[in-house]
Length: 369
Ligand code: SAM
Ligand code: SF4
Image (cartoon, rainbow, N blue to C red; front, side, top):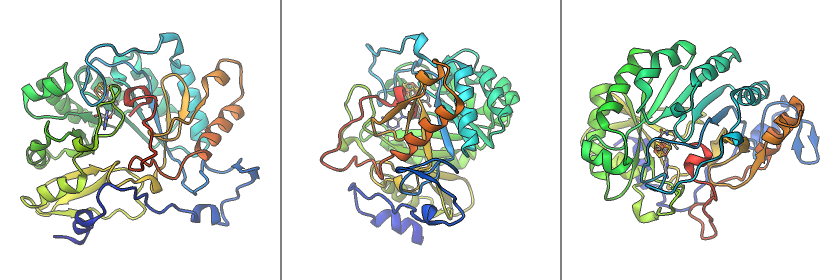
């Protein structure tokens, strides 16, 4: 067993273990931060723990054509009135201001981003803004038809959610849509160059955790990076419980026992996934262990919700609306200040495993996963 895998296997189980923050960024004399009260008012987007923010998740809608059990109820989900959604002009403006504050990567998400018409045009606008990385997270049900246009407009890569490789179980978990369509979309996306293609798998105890090895084999056979995501307390119906969690280290151990794994060394890693490659050189998996192994200490993400709030953490209700500024003739500087305040207000960690943790009021599809 490799040193890195041992670290995963022996780490403290499901307790608050926020990784060390990086106060060095604030101490760095080359960062000419001018402080207004507490708030840093120039330089890159930085929070009070020194975490620099380069990554903006943009939710374009809270609607979806599926009803995954870990995300939404089968019936009764209410959605935002359309007038409350930011227009693509408004989104592009916030993205431009964020870019000027050092954001280099954007990811379009939702809800299901591909149910919003005209997304190809938004991708082209983001490309024209010069982002280094433009990605999309999708359920894959409508991707096959749109992938060529999205790629031509500047989309670089996609993450496709797929929680079972069994047709009947896929239907049980996602409640709508079908597995064959999603698998076909993966082929089309790859043919369009939307790579590396990542497959997001939310594992739930007793529901699909017996497919860990099937997914590992899938990763080895297809070359797609399968990312096992821990079920988070962000389902709209509030049915999450720790007993449904499948810790990432357990996943690593089970795969390692069959196909030995080695951690991919990533000095200064800020991505949420811990990457492992198969020792025989065939394929890679990722573990997103948000609950059992929080990676808050290196989090570089902020979110723009579909209704125009800047959100600094999935698990914090702290939101800073930018829509009012956009719709009342506000300046770019005012938007920048909201971005800075949102980042500055970020907590050091999500505290899911603390007794005082309260579920956020908005669920995953309302925030933008
Ligand atoms: N509709 C798209 C999709 O499903 O890929 C994009 C939005 S979805 C909210 C983004 C990601 O969040 C997906 O990979 C989904 O599996 C994941 N997700 C949703 N609810 C979750 C939960 N309660 N815990 C962990 N991951 C969740
Ligand atoms: Fe829709 Fe994605 Fe939520 Fe599933 S996870 S219900 S596809 S938004």
